[in-house]
Amino acid sequence: MLNPLRRFRAVRPVPGPPPPDGEVLLDARGLTKSYAGADGELPVLAGVDLRVRAGEIVAVLGRSGSGKSTLLRCLAGLIAPSSGTVSYRGAPLTGANQGTAMVFQTFALLPWLTVQQNVELGLEARGISARRRTEAARQAIDLIGLDGFESAYPKELSGGMRQRVGFARALVVEPDVLLMDEPFSALDVLTAENLRGELLELWESGLFPTRAIVLVTHNIEEAVLLADRIVVLGARPGTIHTTFEAGLERPRDRQSAAFAGLTDRVYRTMTGRTGGAEAARPGLAGTPLPEAGVDGLAGLADLLAHRGGGCELVELAEDLGLELDGLLPLADALELLGLAEAGETDLVLTGLGTAFAEADVRGAKRIFAEAVREVPLVRLIITSLQENPGGTVRAAALTELLGRHYTSEQVVRQLETATDWGRYAELFAYDADRRAYRLEERGLSAP
Image (tube, helix red, strand yellow):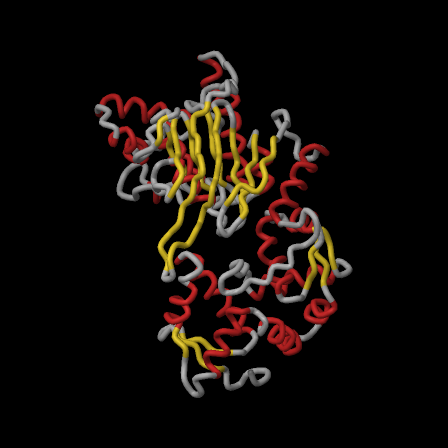
């Protein structure tokens, strides 16, 4: 798709990006957010202090469960904090923040409305007249390069085009701050790269009708490429762990030593390996299990074995054409199971991990079974089944127990991971229709 900036540059001056004048647009002070759990409140954010100033792009990074999206929704006024305040231009929010607009990961378009109608939604909600809505929406659609598709429905558009509609819908209200929740993660690599480039061009051109951007992402390189300031959240509950000032001129060269150095520093902070590995072994009330399927674990172990037993994860991700963040849960899982040891930037197979990678299918299963028995949630399922000979354990009982320590989304992911690992190890069977576990009679070894 042709870059829409080419048309605008021919008819209007290009003043450049909004100057970083220091005006505080958003100000979160002592922001805490908790959700109700079976045994009380489940903290998601705790004591977050964050200021967003005019003229800057702020990226918010953090692992799954760190509260990134919750923070963004609090800034938008879509979620009220449990304590602390969020202010827009010095005034505490009491509802939706009229100075912000959001772009979502899942596009969030209404399928029964056309592109034009979807873009007009925000203006209609603000009581703008039909004539002014139509004119403003067409300008926004033209700006993001979708002119000619005004009458198309979302089902007629590719993923990249749908996200362009999402951008147009947010920009048409001319927000002071554009909030973006992993806006490129649902797109293929080339489409995402193209949209990032166009976003930066619009920002640098002065055509962007917004004064600041807050981007939630799981992609470290994306944050380093786009942001002036990178905020890394710790997890359980989410707090600001570290803030990095990018200090890199645009356009940014991904091959430069400065770019690589900042990426590496952020990576070390994200993985918690700034001064040695964190040997965190998740418990029922501790760190959530990594979202890592058995096939991915075995594949990563095999790749490490073929590289002499270990390598740097950044290098491996580049060689595979993957995002680094996609490897982190797999690396955490191998470390959790005692199959690998993590350094500051690399991952090395242990003796057990090497045996796992080199074994045949049955041998690998036996090794995995012994390792996975030590995982608290898997051990809980096995123990519960042993205490109920010939019986079953329903997933609902485990859901209730986990709900005391995790959000509902985390509970689902925990059980999916534990179920996948236990079934592969033939430690127990799972009936998806009844949502119940039973001991695996033909297991590799008796529990």
